[in-house]
Image (cartoon, rainbow over all chains, first blue to last red; front, side, top):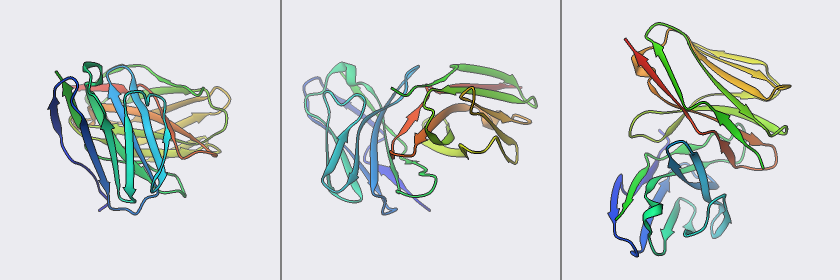
Length: 113
Length: 111
């Protein structure tokens, strides 16, 4: 059974803290994605990676950075968390052929106080 | 840039059919997808359609694609309470591995 796991389901942090969100996939997928989900706005792409050590900005990269040191792991970093980064964060991965189905993790609900 | 739009809410009675609509702007779309998100969970692919198809049926699900109007719909027959979820429409283009998602439609099924 294919799997994308995220390190935490719920996280509460304070303004200014550095936050790490981890995502691991076991499908040997090349592509990995980080989205944030907010009511009425759908999923917005923050960053994606198409290979180890490669990354590209998505639609809303400001305030975020990413790291992909190993193929199976993609980390999202909030250098200095702010209250407007309170959101649900979803990680996904996909291969490079066929219908390009994206497989999603369960999400991390981050609250920044 | 590309855009995908959906209505935010749909409420139906158990046993009725549900129709969730989506419009998109990218004329080079290759695949169009419907994802389902149950409460507290990530998204799961429900069904998809290749852009050269008009219709796809999979048990209770029927996907209709009107390429001329860039309109996609998902029909759920005999809607059950377990179908209550958020449904996302998404599209991909041939030259990218990114998906563009709609805002999601929250389907509520009442007895």
